[in-house]
Image (spheres, rainbow, N blue to C red):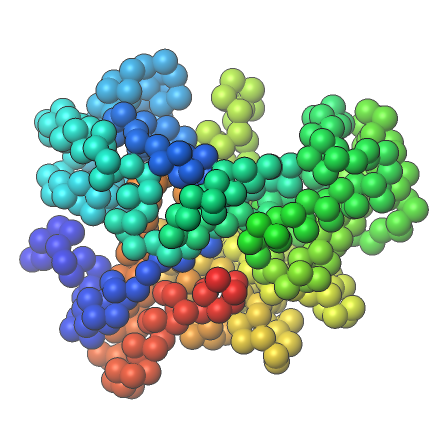
Length: 466
């Protein structure tokens, strides 16, 4: 019987062990999509306790706690940090077979050297031990990043963001690249005229221009896009239920924009037309600059209306959706490709039912020039777990080229999430190693080492130009 979380965790054969320990574990991390707060990196923040760095903003943990009967008071409410941590410790034993159980103990081991299982009986001691470390200089945010051998971080930033903290990191000479990534979702969110106009007011200020027409909007976004590029941005990101690809006329889009700018509510057809036009124009901007564009599709968000009104978005009330993907995705990509305007593209799928659809659809638009131009992205959100990663890589291997895959990202708000890269790398090495042991892949270490190195690091570095 293997020991829990030992050095060969998730590695089931000798080839897998060699690939991980001799290759994957040595490679730096390129975290090309995350939600870390740049201001906390720039000021080299130190967290007061384990609850603050571990539980604040982590809707994965909040969902598990609620499912375990923990009142909201201990999730997002007014309970003390220690009380919240104790309730999390009560929940952890009940997360067996959920990735949270693995992630929790990997993070305790890798950052704090704590090998004890987190449970109610051990919670107080673990909390005190970790807290004593967190207040030291060795556990400042920058040193936590250094500890995990991170080379590049791409944050998630709105077009109106000043990027002042990215600039400070540049000025300070921080050796780890912290680059912005362009997330223009709010520039498309015309469903609510009041909030949309408030956003446009902020965009006017950021771009130092007035926005009275649709052309003004595109000009302001182009200005901000150029600024992001100058700050090192090479990646965009969009979070959508499905692709927006309705036919549209530019004069009609101008009328729709003027209507919403006057504070009037748009109908569903107008919303879809406007979003289709905007998504196309934003994709053209990315292509013009040689960026890679990312599309996170398939989540149905804010399902619990009561909690949404009480707590807001990103608090743990989202789920897998079952949206129609094929036709809208094909229309969107084909329109760009037919005009030679299709940028490097990564699509992340939330519903595993659509895995093969996504993998085959993106491969329709490879151009024979850029290796791996069209990517079926890593397991995302609810698929960011052992079986989701295996299914994604099996589908990609069967229908595309695993060798061109740009690999894993954290997609996290926590500075303690970098062991997720280790988790992915162990799963990848085991997947490849098992096929070698079965005689389905040649036992050629030069080829195998190159594959692991490329998927874990080289492909992303080359793809994003980092």
